[in-house]
Length: 537
Image (cartoon, rainbow, N blue to C red; front, side):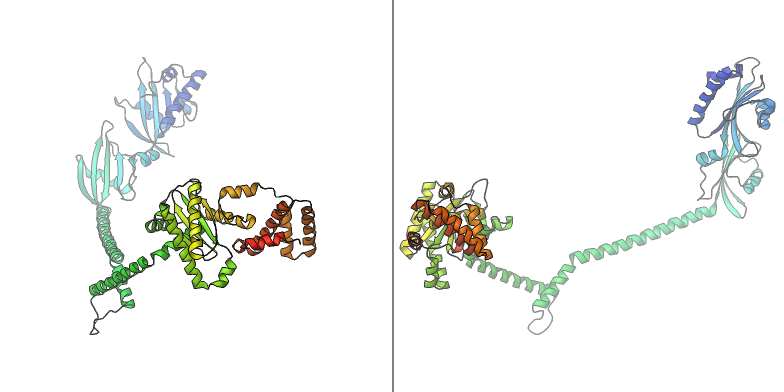
């Protein structure tokens, strides 16, 4: 109806030979055809001018038109209704709708819309191939128009007679069919839907099989779930009972096997007893555990979260926001090793730790001591104290050790900061500070300011490069190269004052000791050092 209402169609009926009108008409009809995929072709027929225009072909005279039967059907149809009708050109089957133009007197124009029957069947009727349903549409004369073109069913339709709309059973073609009929007005078409009864039986069987398979699957899943639950929740108990039986007694005094619940009860009782014994052992060795964890903390710098929490439970020092670390090193350690055996040395260092703790607690400082199995112990205390208070506290500690044990010691300390809480680096710094006693011979508490002062002293004429070159030559056994470097070093010493010359020689000896023996072995006594430096040679 939208195509028929187009003004270009009306104009063509009046002037079918206008070239410009034909171009505009063709473009307009193509838009309509593009919007409807079922439209196969569009015809405009002017009976007055004996002309036919088609969308897909061109302009024809009536006598030259390729489908004369259609032309005759359209011109002879005087029905007052718009009706779809069937048509075949010998190659393809169509259904068409013809609209007559009665707007003008003596006008005999038609618009014919051709619909592809096969495309219409596939996309509109959509017969179910799987269900074997047959759908047929016939006109009022019984001629086939749309649907599944089944010759046997088409032959059987006239035998139905004048049946009303509805449903009935019909036997034919060796099968029993369920037939549903309806009439389409005003075309007068009849719609027949044929469904074989065996299809319904097949679908019922399919439904029954689906129910059986679903029930079987649900039963299988239920059994699998029960197996999984039993394996997950009960199998561990069986494994636990087997483990107890392998590692313990599973029989009573008479040799009979015990019930499983009794095995579990006795096994858990033994486990509780052993745990209590272990807890008692841990409590009795708490001091050793605390010292080992502190030693691990100092050597590694940090502790895992779990170990740190355990250490906090053992000592309040571990949860402090700021810590101080002091190294108390035994002087003349070679003589100390010769004088005392291993067990005596351990007892004396243990006594040093006790004296250090008592002294620091006297100064209101929470502290812990750690024996590092070498020539020194480490003292850690919590809290922020001024430098004067720390020096006074460590001086008292050093004096108490010397007075009670007659052991000369060197003491140095370093503190953590908010930016750096790594005890390993703090420990290394404190060890470096303690080595300053070898260089200047002063009996004092060494700290960061002493190290800074030492670093700012002139290092000429012994540059780091020359000393490193000498040490590498000696370690490689290059005597000639070492001799040349020594010549350069001692040539510069001839022009230095005595005090500066002595300082540079001490620095050279300290570097050689540290390079070849390690920091822990730099324990040369002050008397030996002074006598060696003062020697005229």
